[in-house]
Amino acid sequence: MPEMTYAEALRDAMRLAMQKDRSVFVIGEDIGVYGGAFGVTAGLIDEFGPERIIDTPISEAGIAGACVGAALTGMRPIGEMQFSDFVTLAMEQLVLQAAKVRFMFGGKASVPMVMRLPGGSGTGAAAQHSQSLEAWFTHIPGLKVVMPSTPHDAKGLLLAALYDGNPVIFVEHKLLYKTRGEVPEGWYTLPLGKARVVREGRHLTLVATSIEVLRAQQAAQTLAAEGIELEIVDPRTLRPLDVETIAESVKKTGKLLIVHEAVKTGGFGAEVAARIAEHEAFDYLEAPIRRLAGRETPIPYNRTLEYHTVPQVEDIIAEARKLAKGEY
Image 1 (tube, one colour):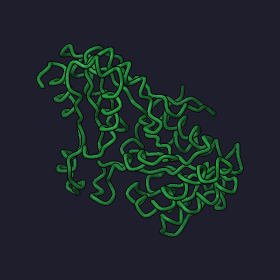
Image 2 (tube, one colour):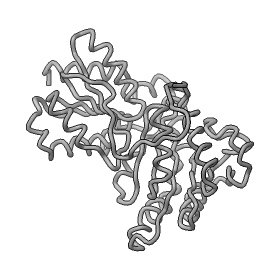
Image 3 (spheres, helix red, strand yellow):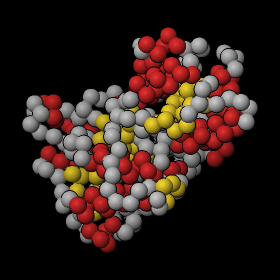
Image 4 (cartoon, helix red, strand yellow):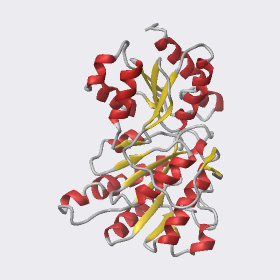
């Protein structure tokens, strides 16, 4: 199986979809000749032209509105925000329009669109370009939220999202774009709403999202040398959430640690914790559920401060070690 970077896997998915289906197009700021802020759409304009790789003015509301309108008329648009933070300027179109239309028209209309959001910290882009806003969207019925951590999942989930029939928020961590992994050639999809057990273990269930999945895997290697075996679960899609896979893991290990980059207050980890607290898996817990999340502060520009603002490998090791050893 060939290897691709995360960015190449996304580009391959978009290329395949546009080759197969004339209704698919990509729209965003500087996505054409420039190839996008992070190079994900590089070269697509040469193959598909400016009518399907559409550069827009600096208007996030315009990008989202164009996607909603096009989707309502039978197209399958893929919108790109330069940074996920800028989606704040498009919330009306996504939350009040895209998420509501299918319900308000009794299922007679659908909005098959994907909005790609490059998010997260680690690039020195400071407070207005480094946030993790995925939990906002999980609160909205009518939207689906996807957050892949590997090139393989990025390609398969993007193709699935494009043909789901509902508006999908597709969150891509910026530090993942250059990561590499095996990716099947050609067309394949992965089901939305199905988690992946990344690593099997017996002492502790660790639910992680996006970049934190990679950090959790590194932490697991260190802890394994100490005799602590982590079981890592990647939800992959936050809405719909695969509660059962997480619950089965918790029943097996008896302990749960949830790790995400977004701040703890209102973060998606709270939803995971609540779902397990309401599930029969709660009776299997041998210790309180723990959450490891970003600090309650805007992301600093200073690289050292930025590093210590979000959970890193050493933070996961320390937290998992304490929980596994019953030190809470």
